[in-house]
Image (cartoon, rainbow, N blue to C red; front, side):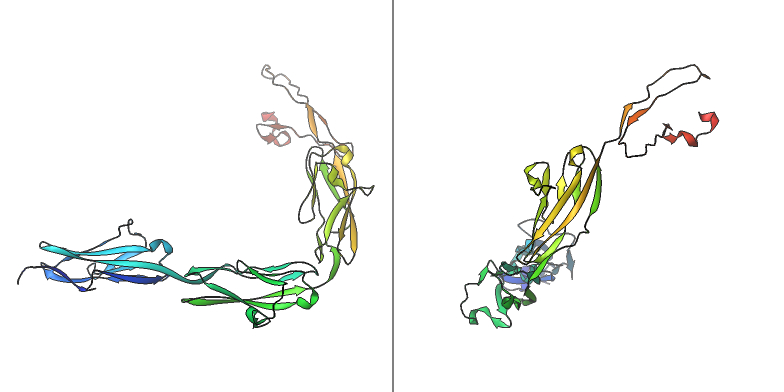
Length: 334
């Protein structure tokens, strides 16, 4: 047998370019001949191989990389070596991906005059092309209508009216695949309705924060206001703060915050009101607590505990010793 340096039988050229699909396995091969029999090594100039996803088979002739991702882009080198020399091949791998959803369009209910927006955000490599259909007709085939526009992949309908109720379809496509999603735009008129029960009572203590609920529904979406018994907005006091869901928060409660509050929900159909009753109680406080004492064994020790509390509440004082209720202790422990 004549000694000879390594020669690549496959691939035969010095480099090649491959496209790998994201999420799929990548298989690279290097077959060499020579004497002594060449050893095969795989290198990645940009960094180490992902040890948890790479396997070598057929005496290192085959490299398999599982679940390829964008981070696997780049060069992979096959090196065949023996005592007489070496041969190499460079694989340049580009990772591409079929379209996948970042934000799939969802059906929504809108009121007259509102702006409807359906988001269709996709990713892929190459970046997918996004197109829209309205009631099955491609947007480019519809008459030019200033009410419709596409903005960064989203379909936007201005000044929606009941006649604009429609089914839409978002389509995202690149050379590796296609995504489709249907979403409805419903434009309806619904009178304002408050879903929170009327005349609820909320109890809280001074210094804490109270939350009065007022969940409203309607189309168009109702505006929500909170008023005091004089019909004045409560938001003039910086301690009062509204939430987007209609809830009213009142921080640093004071005794004079006790009273009735009115939640008014209104749209162009009607307006409705509920009452929320707030009772602010005095905070329970220990005004005089027990003091440490050193006494002779067998003598009697007296501890004092005085507390202030709201007059409407029934007080209860419990004594504990070493973390245990004294009523549970036996005579030998007292």
